Every structure is written in C-alpha cells, then in structure tokens.
Length: 94
Length: 94
Image 1 (tube, chains in turn blue, yellow):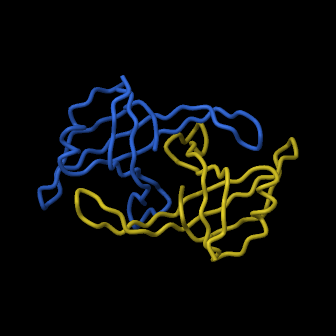
Image 2 (image 1 turned 120 degrees about the vertical axis):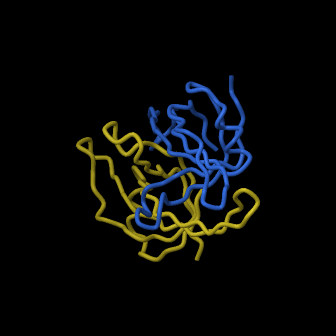
Image 3 (image 1 turned 90 degrees about the horizontal axis):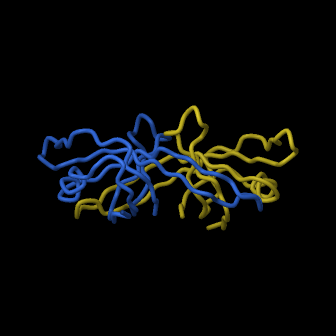
C-alpha cells in the first residue's frame, strides 16, 4: 500500500491486443522510523494500471491525493532493478 | 512485505556517525493477478538495513530465502525515482 500525490499522468495507451495501459508517477512523502529514529521519506514511484481501471485512472487530475494497493515488478527484463508498482486497487484521498 | 532470495550482499559499511549499514539486492519472483489474468512477476529489489539489524543481516548467505517488511524510499534526492526498500523486520524462509 502507498499513499501519494499524482505527479505525472501521460496519455493512456493500448497494447497491441487493445488492452488499456495508464502509466503514472506517484509522489510519496512520509515520516518513518528507522533504527529507532524518525526519518523523512520521499520517493517518486513509477506506477501502472491496466484494463478498465486504467481508463478510470486516466481521468484523474495531477495533484490528486490517492492510496494505491498493488505489487512491485521490474520495469522490464532488461532492467530488473527498476521497479514499477502495478496498481490493483486505488482510492482517492481528497 | 516482500518475499525473495538474497542475490547480492556487499560488505557492511558504516556512516560517518558509526551507524552500521547493510545494502543488498533481493530477487523477487511471484505470480500475480493483473486485469483478471495471471502474470509472472520478477524484480531485483535494492534494499538496505540500518543499525543492529544491519549487522545481523550481514551474516546471511547468498541464496537465503527471506521475507522482509519495510518502506520504499528514493535512493537519493538526486534520483527520486530509484527506489530502495528500507527493511524494518525480516524473517528467514528456509
């Protein structure tokens, strides 16, 4: 689960098989505990939504606060250490 | 939470303040559902442990299966989209 703000929302695209794909970047900012001390956390998380959910997310506005649930996967086999969050579910926070 | 296998475990290092830091790469492989279809997921996740836990994790063996809990953060302010998993807790799976 990740809370954040929609920073980037490029145009919706489709796979050769016609499946809708919406890529985005979610800006995450929080305070966490690490080694017993508070720590400010920042991260710009590349994320993707596929299918009917992609079409719905395509209508969101930049700056939208949202919570997303999903799984981490490599951006591609060529770059196994570049991570993309695949969104299963999302909810708007404002 | 992430399940995976320890792929890389460079030498333990210390911050200028003397805090132990253990970086690592965890190979994650799973089957997930996306847009109603099963999907094989691969990811090499850069991770870090800090303090006493770092020293404990420094003793692990490559190939060790483990489950880790923590939070995602940018690798640095310069690269806000490169993600590192900061490990709060871990458990061995074999």
